[in-house]
Length: 262
Image (tube, rainbow, N blue to C red; front, top):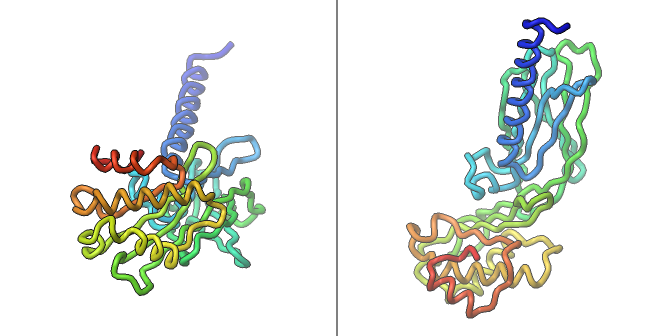
């Protein structure tokens, strides 16, 4: 027969577990990929999520840093710290907490952005603070290290970036541009030059279809035509590969309706 104390203790455990799971869902919502590592009994030990390029800021979530990992310990007092391992090109990299819940959550910006967006693999792990146990790993995840450039001979952008974005269970790509005052003055007439500069500075993934490229071009034209004032178009012009390739007359109608996110 279960005592009253046992019932209360079980309820507290259930509530704590539910809170951890809900916290994971909310925290991971800002990520382009997410992974967990568990103890042998299935209890969650920690979680890690990756924010590709400028995704966190573009998606409206708090800024987590460009191409960053967020590492969270879900079980304080178990003697395990949480970390992440990733493989990019020919290199293997790691970053981890200082100890068991030291801190509970941390964000690490990789600083590995180049001018070409590249895919890579990563996995979370838990390491024994006392050094008496082997490191335990979670499953591998695949994501894209977002590209970033402030270089290049252009008077139209101060910075460009291409990065992975969230699309249900899959992914898509977004390009962000920081237009100069000259680009805003010229407007839509500079779209061909802007398109060229974007791809020379931060090339689009070769996997993008012609339909998606046409959609991106039309979105850029729309932003240049309508977002000429920062208070209207914001500090960046963001174009998303997953938006449909609508007709030019519909693009013009979008401008008339004061919006480029069709």
